[in-house]
Length: 300
Image 1 (cartoon, rainbow, N blue to C red):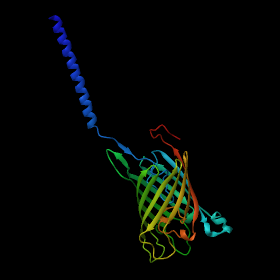
Image 2 (image 1 turned 60 degrees about the vertical axis):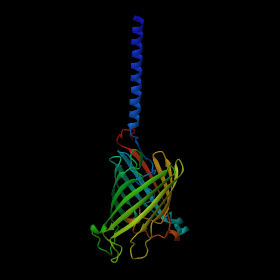
Image 3 (image 1 turned 45 degrees about the horizontal axis):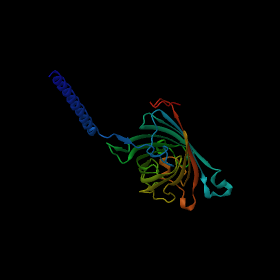
Image 4 (image 1 turned 90 degrees about the horizontal axis):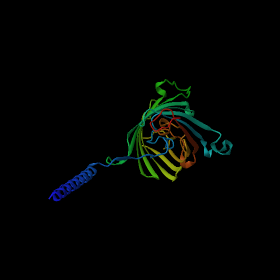
């Protein structure tokens, strides 16, 4: 009887343990079902902060300083005497610093019309999938430029030299090889080209990136002016580019009908006709420096 009692106790313990184990497994299964899937952010919609002439939705990580050198040579159809435009060059030097992963400010100086500019760029939304789905990345961009070019024929006050541009950059990375971007744009010039022209101009830009190899891509950018100036001589800005990524450098080669390298210039007042051969060869080269620890163990 003693044996039967002990056997019963042992059997009871085994049943109890089995029940607890089953209960734990059932609880774990239930918890796994209740855990919501995480959100996956989309990275690398574009390789750099510039598409060609204009900006992309991309911002650098916190504490990053970008030094960007942009060149635009003369028109290719200017002939052999000007070495097909290479004798003439406009240069923009720019510095851009990211205070956070989403906020970047920058300054620059363009030798074309001797323009100084500053901008603010803030990433509003990030494309993501999973628990929270967002189909696009959205970034706000605002620019202010000062044209310091001397015009003896016209009294140029400081207010007349100012121009502003605002853009909502909307991009989607469709795959590892294809990204597209829309750029609704508003430009205000305190001094319009003629007395008959309005100071405000609206445009819609479209651009894209087609990845060719892990380190190269083909880019395109076009701005359609919705209310162009009445005077002839201005055209929609068009550009085709080829990007090469080499470590901390992004090297961009391009063909464009625009000389200006700021939105206040090339969106409203591009003077070249791309299809008539008024094409400028140019390039952008950027170098990134990590000045502040961003929590990823990297610092320049």
